[in-house]
Amino acid sequence: MGLVPEAQRLRVVTLTDTLGVGGGAETLAVDIVRRLDPERFHRTICASRLRGSTEEKAGMNQALEELRTSGVEVLSLERASRAQIWSWRPLVRRMRSGLVDVLHSHKFGSNVWATALGRVAPVPVVIAHEHTWSFTGDPLRKLLDRRLIATGCDALLAVSREDRRRMIEVEEIPPERIRLVQNGIPRPVVASGADVRVQLGIPADSPVVGSIGILRLQKRYDELIRAFEIVRSRLPDAHLVIAGDGPERAGLEALVASLNLAGAVHLLGFRRDVTALISAFDVAVSSSAYEGSSLSIMEYMSLARPIVATAVGGTPDLIQDGRDGLLVSPHDPAALARATIEVLLDRERAAALGASALARQRAEFDIDITVERIAALYEELYARATGGKPRRRPEPAGISG
Image (tube, helix red, strand yellow):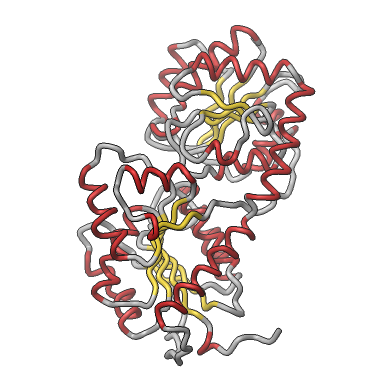
């Protein structure tokens, strides 16, 4: 098939706070825009902020290089604070010039801005993508979701059935405005975990419990550490590996010290060798209090790791309890420990759980499946907005960095 003429390709702008760091939503936003078919779409990613720690900046620079290598235009607004409203001018000018056919925002803050700006500088299609649902009891956020985001967008994307249910029942958003599009991840390059064990000083035959994620309260790593204390009482040579950084780090370090687990618990901070780390886990654990559609769990599945996870949000959509992993109630370190010990002591069952998880991930939660569903949604909503009539659009001014 020949390349679609530039004037006929949909101009898609993906709006996100930052690039490739900060969590699964940012990673997914970059993956989606990179993988959109360039024969059907002119692809731009607009990052409102490109700031962070030295390690985070390294991650952003890697994401920028991947985007540009893939032919994706990068528009950086360089916002230093929420008060810098004037920083939105480059995006607004582009919208008013007819250079945006689809504006696709990710996460609550960007969703607010996309739907607000979409009223000032109308574009044919605005899509708001919510990656988790955690705000029961926050009247302002529920009001903004219902009155601004849901009414200002053409589709509000939910990543799990549970998120969709809560949007309808708790926030009273009309069901017809919500689309369910579950997340997916790329197929990983399998790496050996042996070098990770050597690097961390973990004996080859010691059981390793592991988790990947941002150290924030949502992930309840404090409960995982307390569960690991119980695991350690049964399996004294076990180790716990947690990769990620965030605001809870100091508190978690203090908890490790208070439980006399120094040397057995490894808080690694931000890491880029995630595949090798996961490959070193004998069991991967998600202890979250809430989740949308966890990319970390999908990564564990893609590497055939046996999984123990709290049954929250979209996690039961990913894991069939007893078949693809073990699900336990949230906020119950004892239950988390029991399930983890059960998997560690039964290697045959652990292998079966991992194999089932891998097959399920490849069949249902692959990034190419997610991208094609979103691409089809762009074209459907654009055709609806324009009555199916193609129109000639002005050429883009060029790539901004």
